[in-house]
Each structure stands twice: as structure tokens, then as C-alpha cells.
Image 1 (cartoon, rainbow, N blue to C red):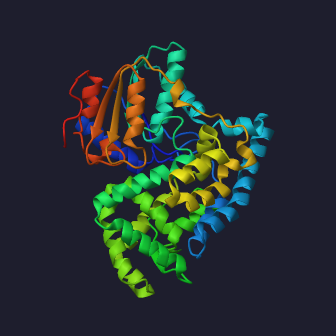
Image 2: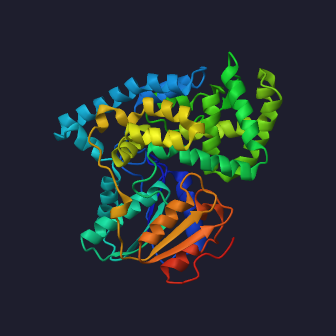
Image 3: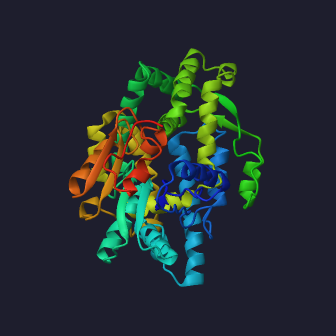
Length: 431
């Protein structure tokens, strides 16, 4: 059973903490299969990590400044362009690859081929692919490749929080934001009005509140790169709470429902006073911001892999697609305009994307799909559409659950072992 994690760009799969979590799961679940974990190409756990110190340093330093998302994105684009060009030139010299060939190495098609190659090298005669979030896309593409190659080893797909090919492009961002807002309003009465008031106030103030956050990555060893050593040994990180960062934070917390109570409490306290002392004493908001920064600057995450994969898979939306999305969701028109004007996928590095289309995938194998009813990140409608297009599907819709159903505890720990063993009653509630 090969587990394909979310991301793209996450290389934490084979670090010590993650391995301990999986060891505990194996001891409790006792699946009738080996569990295979791997860190994808270019990420921290792979043999050739792909990072750009200049971009990571710029992003960290910018946190302490009162800048808009548009200003930050415009300043970061030339840095990212130099990063991509530098790595492509190195590959051209060492391997004779053209730039487009190098970036295609991080597409989901290439990553799917990696998973099949890994399984072939390990010599298993039967296997299952288990994808979560972005990992479901890789699993789907790998299954299609296996089917086209008439490889009979693949027994089934397990997909949690489906992110299928053809979804997630920039023009769909306003739809996801709108779903996120509905989810927040279901969770916390009056959220919409409170958030809009705070957003407007943060936009108008001359200098946004400053927070001194504990660095959760402090003193992590080993520190493999100079920039990371500097960041990881920095005990505190300074952050200005701007309106645009509040927007990013509002979406980030939906990946982890455990953060939501602190997030809502922190917003209410923030609404009472935007003064420096009030912000410093806002412990719930500080907790959420620390989680936000720790995730964004985790030493296991590669921003370059993330951008390369998304841009190669989705390409760049046309101006007409952006205008249509703005008309459909006028409340997010300005934010979409800013994002499109500084779209990383418009860089010359991604002029020949390897765009994926979910409509072309038809798989004749059993498929188990989990979808959170209140998931704004990978909406339940994406799972339903995929389920309707495939012949052998068991769809589990988890009521009241957001992103990543299995990690929420909605089903008990034996859901996956039961599926592998052929039990029709897969999801029994709770642990």
C-alpha cells in the first residue's frame, strides 16, 4: 500500500516524527499490507532537494513589513524567475535537458511515473494506491498509466479529499474562497461581518499591528542549508498583520479544524482593539499565526516544487476565464485581479505546460473515495463528479467534516484495512 501525501512540495513523509505517527497507526490498524512512504522528487526527504534560498529569505523578511499582496507578489516574481532559470541551466549542463523538460519532471505525470517505478523496483505483485488531497491527483494519473500499460498489480485506489486533474486553477480560486466563507459562517455566527470589518480596518491603518511570534521551527537540527540554519535558529519571527495576510490566514485554518476555535476567538479579541498591546495579548490569534508561519516556512516544504507542479499541471488561465470568474464572484474580483497580475504560472519557465484533464481518466478498478461535506479546499462536488464518471466507486461523504476525512477521525482506524480485505462496510464512525 503506497501512501501519496498532499502538497505538492511536502517532503516530510520520511522524517522521524512522521514515521513515528505511521508506526503507531500500523500497530493499531494492523492492515494486511505493507505501508510504503516516500518523499517526492525535489522535496526535503528526497536525494536531491530543490530550494531557492533567495526566495525563502525574501518571503521571511517580507513578513515584518506592511506590504500588500500585490506589492509582495510583484517583488517576488523576478526572484522566482532567477531561481527557476538557475536550476534549469544547471540541469541543461549536467543532463542536457531543455528548460521545459526539466520543469515537466515535477508534473503529476512524472510524479505518477515515480510511484509506479518505485513499486516495480520493490517487486510487489499486488498493490493499492492511497492518495490524500494533492496525492489523489498523483494516484489517479498513476492508475491511468498502469491501466494503459496493462499492469494488473494495481488492486484499488483510496482517495481522501479528491483534487482531480483539471481542478484548482486560478480562475476557480474565487469559488473556493466563497465556499470557505460559507464554512466559516456555519462554524461561527456573525463571522462574515466581523471579518469584513477587520479587513477594512487593517487596510486603512497606516501601520499594521506587529506581532512577535515564537518560531516553532526554532533550533531544529540538522539545518542542511545556510538560509534554513539562519531561520531555524531564530527564536522569534516578527510579523505585521495586514489585511491580505488575514485573508490568507482565513483559508489556511480550514486545513486543520483544531485551529478554528482559536481563530474565531482571536478575531473577536482583535475586533475590540487593534492596538499593539491588544495584539500582543491576543494569545488565541498568536497561536494560529504561529501555526501559519511554521507551516509556510517548514524546512520540509519546497516552494519551487509546489509552483512547478501546479503550473505544469494547470497551465495559466486565459484572461477570459479570469473575467468570467470575476463576474460570477464580484466580491473577490479585486483579489483575483491581483493574483492574476502576478501569476507565477505566467513566467517563461512554464510556457509549455503539461496540462491535465480529469475528463480523460476512466479506470476499471475499485475506487474508495472520502469527501468532507464541509471541505472548502477540495469541495465535495469534485469527489461526486469523479465518482459519477467511474464504474467501480464507493463514495463516503463525511457530514460535518472538512479537509482530510481520515485524519479527522470520522471513520475508525480500521477503515483502510477493511477496504483492503474486501469488507463492504468500510467506514464505521469514530475511534
